[in-house]
Image (cartoon, rainbow, N blue to C red):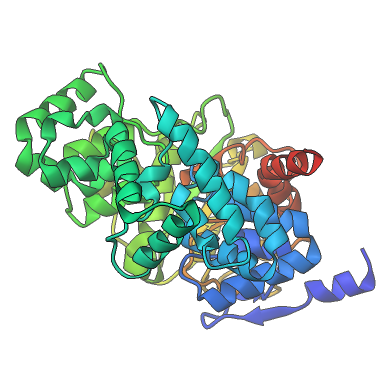
Length: 480
């Protein structure tokens, strides 16, 4: 490591709570990977992404595909659309590299960001080709669902007119084409509007639509809806939870919005990302007051990921996790329903003294003469990263303080995973220079996949592993 690298490691700033952190990771793509949030301004999103493009163009595009991917990545719609629109206007050749993957990883309507930009003709060509294939197919793609109707409001109507003109179709031809394809798709919104309830097959309704229209189902077709839930309870069918974030279920419960039975079935049917993982992980979930910003989505994410991980854990911490605020608290997952499990989590909504959680862990181990193997191999910290100045922060960051404290009494600090769920994080607890630590961000449970089984554990290597799939996709396209 060079002198300049060592000097960068000294570049600490202090937050309003007295804790020290880094303003950047010293890797622009890592900043995008760890700091981008749906709550940032467009300008801040583009500033971070521009720096990443300058540093490594292909890696920046891989980051963008990871942001887009609803099934295996972050699934952040707004961030993707802001950046893709920017690429269409300013770097059309880069936008064209992304365009073929949008419908596969996200939704067809995202490609419409390319209308009225330098890649408009390419977008129209893609639409034209897919529509022709869909019209011949018994099972068309969802393109027709997401294309704007001519009588759509506001900007969508303008986009529809552009598409009609480019496809050389009259209003009537365009309307009939979309109507024909949407009939094949059996779109839930169309059935609700036209009151054709017999056409609704609940087993094929997307999860988010199930959540969105729960009240309509209960009111308009109560018997059919209850029968579907009974089928789910008996295990005769499974509800598709692909693309569903754990926090979305938690948020519905804590706001008393909807059908508890449905949400419980959704919770039970989430994909088990940790299946086959025997890592002994302890989750530390931030329940401080600042986590209730942005409609409490950070808090719901923290609790959702803690419950999800604890239930699927296989080590001694199975069905257990720590919360931290003014005091740490070891929670045991109790209850049959997701509401009961949430209600059994104590409400400690105060400051963010994470050092007390590590102090509790360390003193308990030391006082009882526990071995290193009795400690968790990984600690997953889900937080907005606004930590208090605490016991271990006199000499530097919280992370540096924890390492020194564990070493003083003969232990090695477990591998740490910082999971940023902040609206607009001002700094980072670690940089690219740190080892035995990872830092991720976002709200999707998908981010957990492979995170606990990686051999190389530093922020950059973890990022590269998570982005490897998208790097491969881009490289294969370049070869083609």
